[in-house]
Every structure is written in C-alpha cells, then in structure tokens.
Image (cartoon, rainbow, N blue to C red; front, side):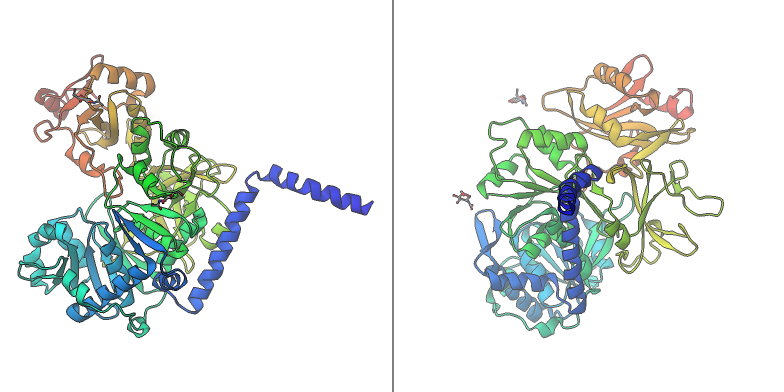
Length: 614
Ligand SMILES: *[C@@H]1O[C@H](CO)[C@@H](O)[C@H](O)[C@H]1NC(C)=O
Ligand SMILES: *[C@@H]1O[C@H](CO)[C@@H](O)[C@H](O)[C@H]1NC(C)=O
C-alpha cells in the first residue's frame, strides 16, 4: 500500500513540477552551471589564476589542437603560446615593459591582436583596447586617459597614428608598428623584433603581483554623448564574461566564429575569452561580411556564431538561397535581436539555439536567456537575485529621472510593467567603473530604497512577465516624448522597415523651437534600385502609427551611422536636426493632407518662426 503511494507520488511528481514550471529542466541545467561557476570562482579567489593560466593549461592538454583559424592559416594552441612568448620578450627588451604597465593596442582583428594580448598578460601588463575607427582628437583622448606609455598598431593604421604623432611624441610615448621595418622617425618596427625573440616560456615571477582585482583590460564604451569612456575590466570580470560561453552551452569541440571587433567586450571576452575558457577553436575574421558569413561557416565547419544587434537582420535581409540551412551552426550567442528577426532567422537558417544575453562592459547585472524563449533577454531566478540584487523602478520619461515617493525613495514597478533596471552595487556585484572619471554620476543612483544605498543605473527599460522572462523594452534615449505621448523609436522603425523600398531605418526625436519634447524624424536607407515614394510612406505611417509617432521629417542616407558594434547613432543625427542649409542628404517633410514633400528653406523658416503648426 505504502509502496503504491510512493510509486504514484514519483510518477506524479514530474507532472506536477512541469505543471508548475514547464521550464524546469532548463532552469535546473542553468542552476547546475551557475553553481559550477561559483565553485570555480571560489577556487580562483582562494588561489588566483587568470584566463591566461587557463589558456596555458589547454596548451598543455592539447598543444596541437587548432586554436585560431584566420584566412588560410591555422595556429595551434602551442603555436599561439610560442608566438605570444615571442611578443612578450620583444616588448620586454625593446619597450622595457614591466608588471602593471599599460599598453594601448590600436589593431584590427588579426592573430597578432591575440598574440599581443596574451603576451602582455604574460608580462602582467594591462591592455587598453582602442577602437580602430577613432581618429585624431578622439584617438588621443582614449590613448591619454588610460595612462599607457606604449602604443602598438598595425601597418594599415599607421596613417591614423601619424596624424597624432607630434602629440604622442610630446608625451614621450613609444610607438610600435607590426611591420618588418618603418621609415617614419619615432615609430619603431615590431615584427622583426618579434621574429628575433626567443619563444621560451616566461617566468611566472613577472606577473606575481597580479590578482583578481588588478585591471586586465581597458575597454572603451561609446556613450551617446561625449568622448568614449574607458571601462576598467579586472581579472574577475574577465572570468565572469568568459563564463558566458559555458552558460550558453559552448563545448570544447566547438568552432566559434569571431568577427566582432576584438576591441569590444563581445569580441574579446564573450567570444575569444569564452573560447579560451572552454579550449575550443576560434575562426577569426577581420570584419563582418554579410555575403561571406554562411560560406565561412561552411568552409570552417563553424558550430557557434556570435551576433549583435542588427547583424541577424542583415543576414535575414539577404536574398534567399537553396543552401541556407546547409551548415553546422547549432548555437548563436549574442544580444539585441528583435523578436521578429529571431523568428525569421530560425525559419530561414534552421534549428539554431539562440542564446540572448544582456549586460554591459561596466554593468553589474547580467541576464542570460538560457531557455531560448523568443524575444526574452533572460530569466529571473532567486539564485541570480540573491547574488545580484536588482530592481525595476518607475521612471519618468518627461524629467528623465526615476520617480520618487514622498520619502524620496524609488518605487518598484508591479510585475508585467516596464521599469528602469538598477542593480545594487556591492561586493558580489561591483560596478566596474570608468578610468579617470571620478564622479561617474550619470551611472550611479543613491538612496534608492534605503538611505545611503548605491545602485548602478543601467539606462535600460525592462519588463518581467509572470513566468519570469525578462524583456528588453527600450534604452533611455530610445524613447522621446511628443505632444505628451511616448514614442518608442524601435517600434516606429519596425513599421518603417515593412515599407518595400526601405532598407534600414533609424528613428529619433529632434527639437523644434517653441515646442516641448521632440518631434519624430527618421533616417532611412533605400533598397537597391528603389526610390523614395513619399505618398506610399505617408499612407503607411497613417495606417499604422498614431499621429504623434509619425516621423515628421525623413532624411535619406547612403548608409546609416553605426558604432563598432552596429548600434545606431542617434544623438548626432538628433543634434543635426532638419535644417536643409546644413544637411546635404535629401530631406522630406510630412505636410498635413499632402504627404512627404521635399523640405525647403521656406518650410524650415516657417517652422522656426512658428507660423507652420506642427
Ligand atoms: C569540415 O568537416 C568535414 C566533414 O566532417 C571535413 O571533411 C572537413 O575537412 C572539415 N573542414 C575543416 C576546415 O575542418
Ligand atoms: C539594380 O540594377 C542594376 C542595373 O540595372 C542591376 O545590375 C542589379 O542587378 C540591380 N539590383 C537588384 C537588387 O535588382
């Protein structure tokens, strides 16, 4: 009798669990992984080892396994180890580097980026990763703010360095270029010195004082305004970011395709770092190429791809091909995919698990969508909340400040509602912070729930549904107000993208004299061989968008301005406004009852003078 009861219970239990939580297995797998990582981190805390040490263990375990594949060359783990030792020795001899020194890397994606990074780690040095698109004042700013005394660049970027050479020389900076020789005074060649150096392992003594809290990297985050800021990435953060691959299900026999710039977190830590942590093979590409993407995946037997923001949409926008599903890719790891693209992508390219994550280089909160629920960026769970206390709080779009109650504290939003994500700054969830930026006020919130507490302000509006799935709603700044209504730029852009001649859309709000808030404007690129049809666009926005959300101005561009990680730039466009005297691109104005007409000086002056009602 009792036995019967036990059997019945055992049979019913799984049913009950699944009824309570259909995602139980996924959650369980996630918990186990997180606990495993917790144990690993505890060991690392007790006896420090860096990601470099992890790499060296893989070198010992499988020296001849392919580590980096680049164009037509392949480098094994042991080759990479030797190459990086040579770089370290060359820099030790010729740049007199020692533990704790900072070296700026101004390099595009290429194997030497990795050898230099590992080489610097062997010397206990910090690598400051400069964005290869920046020039002149911005380049100098980024270089100067990290306190580097040495700059390493590639032959193809030498011109950009020469532009700022006088200023660098004034600061006594040593500049090395990855070429055999160099005829410019005060730029030294490095490749010849690397070739002559010994490939013998370097003494651990050279980096004996490096610990979990020592800076490992400086990574620049491009804010919407002002010059880039250097986020300090210490060894603890390097580890945590590298574990993302493990959480996503990366195996040691995977082949990971890395085409995102290595100077950003996604490329170097989640991509390369994750691959090093697992000991897998990396296919490195100079830059993203939509036409070569799948051919590369087939050629190199890629099993895991990374993505960011718009890239999945670029891929879905290519003409369909018969071999779309002919590849070995099983997992895509990244962030910023929209729900509709997610569905399109799966339909088009087959059964690929999409592991969306959320987090920023300097942030202290991270979500991973380990279940693969379309549209979700992550899942709430108590383990996560225990370690990283975070909250969604009410936010006032008008004042662009969190709402406060009568006692001056922030207010949590009820489940299902959108709120601003803030994460408590504490020992287990530190804020990385920026270099040489003491106040960092814009990212910190004080007195959130009790007097004196301190939170990281993510600047992102999120929503959690009643099953615990987390959805990204908006980035502050991606929403503007017009006529007292909120306009979500991504939502408007999604509608514009369904118009047949629109290739890409970037929606933002511009200021108009004499008006509160901002009026909608969209920068568009057109599909090949298609022209702008103001009447059709007008019909479309009239059918699908409320009047306050319809873009009043349209700007046609050849290419949309994006950051190195393909995020759209809005602030600059918003500042440029809609003055036809300043903007060279074709401009259109939505005239009531007429549709989009070419913008003229007359229209502009009547808007400025307030005679034309908006
Ligand atoms: C890819 O896999 C196929 C079949 O397993 C194999 O024949 C081929 O050599 C592999 N290519 C590479 C570049 O590893
Ligand atoms: C656009 O037009 C050119 C010239 O007529 C043609 O070669 C090209 O294939 C067209 N492109 C598309 C996408 O139709």
